[in-house]
Image 1 (cartoon, rainbow, N blue to C red):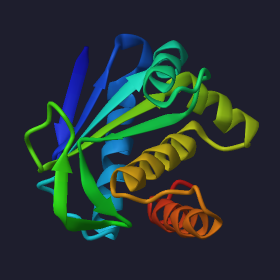
Image 2 (cartoon, one colour):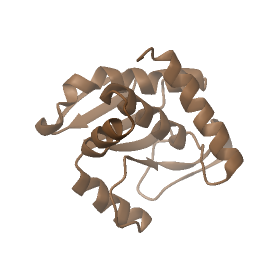
Image 3 (cartoon, helix red, strand yellow):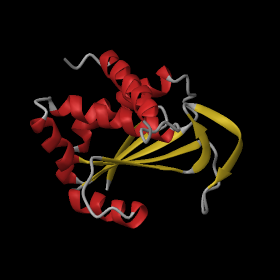
Length: 165
């Protein structure tokens, strides 16, 4: 597995996903999200570019969903809510560093498919999913309609700063 990193954002990929070509875009998208949310660069995020099969397996194993998805976010500890870190942080089992936010898994085939379906460039869809996943790591959700409005509004604002149009 190949990798690159900058600003405490680490990208991992296999050859089939041309990760080097997408790494700068992913790093910029995540960096801008952290900056927009006023999150210190000391917080590390790992990003894995994966296949549909891999993301389906993860989705099933951890969320009990038996289908592919575009992005999965896994926090290393509980304590983030709407971009704020609470005082009562609880590390998840096996984790010992509160400076690591978590991991994002991006399905490159799913993101490519969605870009075509929505008449978007691959870069714009990939950036959207990186922003979306990072917001999840920061404790944002879209289970309730008001949460959805906040999260999607933030995604759109950050995406507009990327100048991908």
